[in-house]
Image (tube, rainbow, N blue to C red):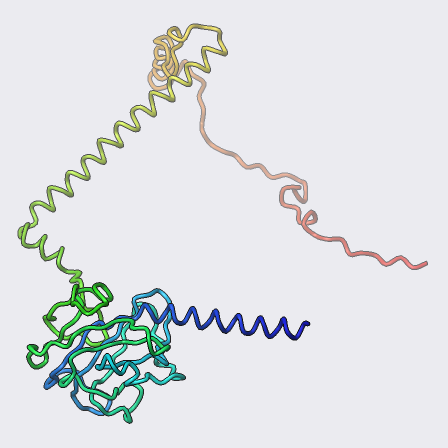
Length: 305
């Protein structure tokens, strides 16, 4: 019974893996192709041939080993992509390039037909029946002019060409749509060539920040004074309006002024202080403040029985 259960688990696991792989293969897209290659990308043999770019539109790795590429709807298994090649595992949102040179003996990525004589490109799942993506081959493309999706993986998969366009430049194994990160800086340079707008904006930000800080500190001070008055009023039993918190009465200022006057001007009425510190010698051999015996450990004594 246990053996049958283990076999069942193995079969179920393999079935789930195959289903997941089939679903992942469905996220592959024909992304771009070039028919006439005279001065474009070269293959690993240094030759220039037609090429087809596939794109993994999912966020998981897809192994396209076992899938098929063909230009004949009546022969969906025309070129089987070899399995077992680590390079056929396409990482998320990445591209892979196939050379349509009709020389499959050159390796995994050299297929058994060319695009000059092809009317259509078809990508087929590993079951050899399900068509993943298809696109007609345009015959009006000039040399080194490719046809691809405006954005990687975006557009139709039924061959009507929706979302496809003639590319301004070929982009094999890279993104079809590239965003120029310097575009905004260039736009700002054109809008403000002398930097006046930027200077005024920076000064405005600084002054607004200073005003905000002034208001914040002003009201924080008022709040603290009010809280202090409340505490004093609660302790003294007075009304809040009668509490003079943080302010000295006039008598206190008068007393302080008089004391300073007597000390500075009428020094004869004030005790004379020499402001001299005298250190006297003592007969004590040591002071507890400087004694080191308090920082020493006593040697443990071993008591023998």
